[in-house]
Length: 409
Ligand SMILES: Nc1ncnc2c1ncn2[C@@H]1O[C@H](COP(=O)(O)OP(=O)(O)O)[C@@H](O)[C@H]1O
Ligand SMILES: O=C(OP(=O)(O)O)[C@H](O)COP(=O)(O)O
Image (cartoon, rainbow, N blue to C red; front, side, top):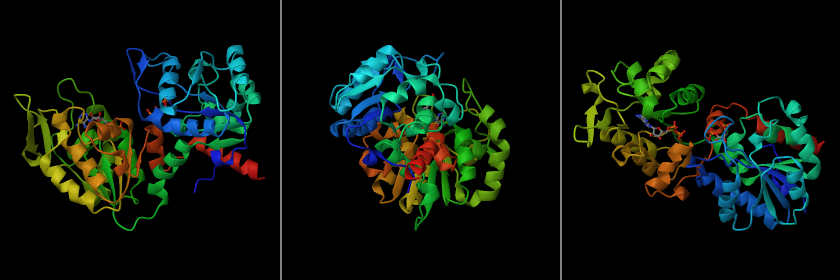
């Protein structure tokens, strides 16, 4: 059980400052709707329905990057999901923001400007230091309580995440609660049958770290994607190097080579590697080759092959728990979706505890007509999910727990 208080513990008629994570893909300057809006809308609706005055903080991108924009567009998308007005003020903590906050009525919702436009938000520092910033000292007196729903940003020590819980009674929102529970399950829950982890995607460095950390909690790892090719390379197959314009493999290989070799050496019996791979054939069609028949690296491999999918499916079906981190292939291209969709469909059809993490991989669920309801949890977190799996503490969760201990004393 998490040791933080939740919005069930809020006093009636509170003025609440709520941190969401609405960080989204930006296309042509506009935020794109995604699961984060839908999930956070549940917390916002519940708070507003209860009659609290609800002020929202969130970030988008980082200064200097293309996706660093105003949250005006986010307010409109969120309003659609919450099904009520979400007012927006283009200010984080100045006069305009404070006036809008103080004018808010019971059950009304206001979104403040991108927190990262306030210079106190970044960089990372200890919570005590962040609690002393002008940003926190200015806003906090206008509120009775702070709610953190931004699980997917909980690995960052930013003012809006770790500063406010030191100076206001602090609570977890619904997203924070459900993400915390599902993502820590691999470390905290006992399962009767095998625990399986599907490992793929492009961020091989992350997932190899997870494999190393989860050594004794996972019975078998089913590999694909870039990490899968790097393990095949360690096993002596001439794959997992950059060809053409790729730059996914060689740098990650250099960085992780020793760890891959030691994980393979120590847990080889638990690691399942692809027996065949798919690539783009001469006429643009999907072509497959057995890994044992690959004599030299001339192709960029974009999916695991059909024999591999047939090997992996029964292993998933007999599992008691399956955790997914990363796609088994380039599923965005239908020709190379078989591995990812095969694994996800097998999980969906199986009555196991299942968590699918990572923004990209979870997009495959709706792209290929699978139902989110057939998974125990589809996480909206990337970096925080990785840290939860490896048992690394999340600073924003730690300060919520500390706030709950203070409240008890
Ligand atoms: N063999 C491969 N080569 C290149 N890209 C791959 C390969 N396999 C999977 N991918 C890509 O990995 C992406 C997901 O990777 P990643 O970002 O690590 O996962 P997530 O965002 O879900 O955490 C997908 O968009 C997919 O196109
Ligand atoms: O989208 C986020 O993280 P993610 O890319 O790991 O899912 C969070 O909003 C954190 O954003 P940041 O990585 O710019 O600090």
